[in-house]
Image 1 (cartoon, rainbow, N blue to C red):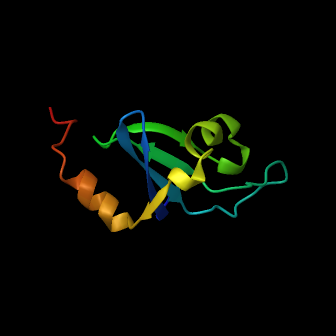
Image 2: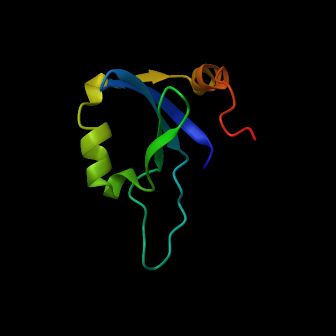
Length: 93
């Protein structure tokens, strides 16, 4: 995952989801030009539930997570670390 540059929360389906925007990659080739940054969606347990490599080209993702931008609340990235860091490890042997 690229370095996070923005964090938001959204209340949906009775839960809180964390939407993390990654650093916009200016890397392109002669075939591709990214039109937006990547975004990752985590649930309250810290489980990755959705993601988009390029939000400028992700219509299904945008329809689900970005259609009501008024429902998004910007928070600090450290707040996400704090909230999700309090969870017990789920991948322990």
